[in-house]
Image (spheres, protein in one colour):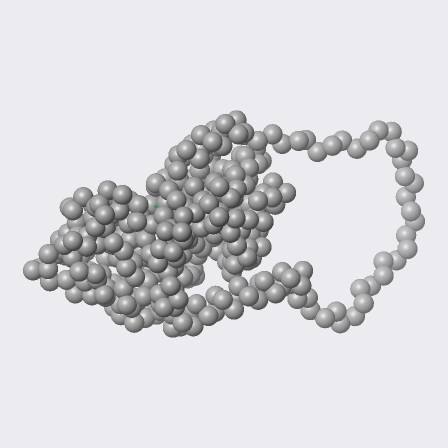
Length: 386
Ligand code: SPD
């Protein structure tokens, strides 16, 4: 599918979900015959009520919870503020890729009240029963979400998750030493005499790195065609001698320090790195890149106490000012409409944060690969071990 078609499909899906939500129901098949009436039976004698039925036990929120998140993806002040407001302490553990998060939950990890998977991983987790349904009564601030984030195609109606931040994947570079990379060719066709040869990294992330190679080759980033994936694998292997390594945690710092000159990575991380080096810049190359939405969800392994405290934390993040604080810290776009009033004009008009239409139309979402997921992983292992 072309980029434009893929974006259009998402828009159509989002719109249909909105329309269905507006109608209040999913379409039901026409009944072919009226349901059979139950035969009248004798009404059993009712025992005399002796006492009122017992109230279901009231759940108290856990006093301490763990958020399993990407690294450096939340202002630690938010934890302090939340603890002051509720008495609940939030601890943090980190992962570096959706695949790492997924493997941890599939392996039966417990102790996490909250996790932050990206769009396509939400779909996989829903299918595998790894997510708990959210109790919307505990998250009244859901009303603050922008309309398009209330009905994301992978989780219409925010049944399981709440959008956390959204962003893009492209190339960050040291602009005083390297011209703006127009094409992914800077990585895939790098020559030993290019100043950035040996001074660049790619994300340590199977789907993201395959997406970069596939988009450069002109293929759909969600292809399951084995020949196209083999071609992308060969391209990734060909690029390896020019790489300093695969890195999803410090890629932006290595560009800011001047150790590396460019990196494949996520927009917000590079924009935060501008605080250390104003020459760090970010671009989506002309062939296109990935657009993604990260989401905060409760895993089905959470206890009722963890789940309630987790929902209270989600509700806190959705406060207008806290939503703005989150995006200001991360330099990622906010799905929270109410937060915009508290965000600077400089932030809201930054095209590296909110891509203009001509960039948006070149972006694609990663989708679950279904049965080809293991093929992606096998080919990625071959790239890493080659
Ligand atoms: N430093 C936090 C970065 C979070 C990036 N998540 C993006 C995942 C897209 N596949």
